[in-house]
Every structure is written in structure tokens, then in C-alpha cells.
Length: 93
Image (cartoon, rainbow, N blue to C red; front, side, top):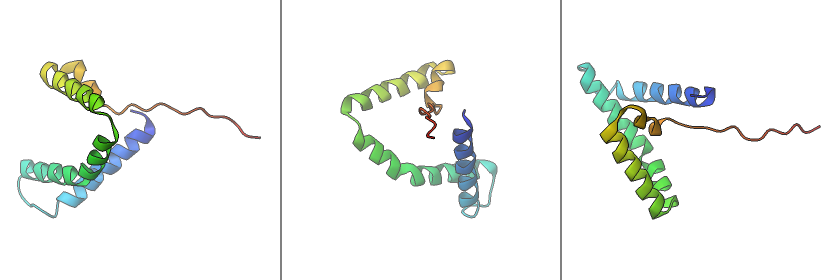
């Protein structure tokens, strides 16, 4: 994962960690569940906006890729990794 993506991931995990701990004081699995629920709530709006901004055929393609990844696992799970490409950098003098 590239450095920017990794930093965002760490920030995201830290946010989930601190926002869910006060909700439930119990076993580890219960805390993990609370963090997951909070994560879904926090990202639901962005997910809905993304879904509304792409075509139906793109949504079908993503759904098929998801189904294949869940069925076959292994290398197919790489579709969930964030891929970033660097933009073109031009030095302005």
C-alpha cells in the first residue's frame, strides 16, 4: 500500500478504535462488532454517493467481482486493496 493510503488506513482504524471503545466494555469480539457497526455507519453516506454516481453496469461488474472474491478467496481478495496511481508531476519554474 502506498504511504498516503497507509496513513489514511491507520487514521481510519484509530478513529474506529476510539469511537467504539466507549460503547461497549466487554469481550474482544463484542468490541470488534461495535467497531464494525460504527465503520458501516460512518461510511454509509460515502458508499451511497459512490453507488449513485456510477452506471448500473459498473455496479453489476463490482458485484460480480465481489462474488468471485468471496467464493474463490486467495488472490481474488486483492480487489479489496486500495490502488492508487500517482499523477503526472510537472515542475513549474
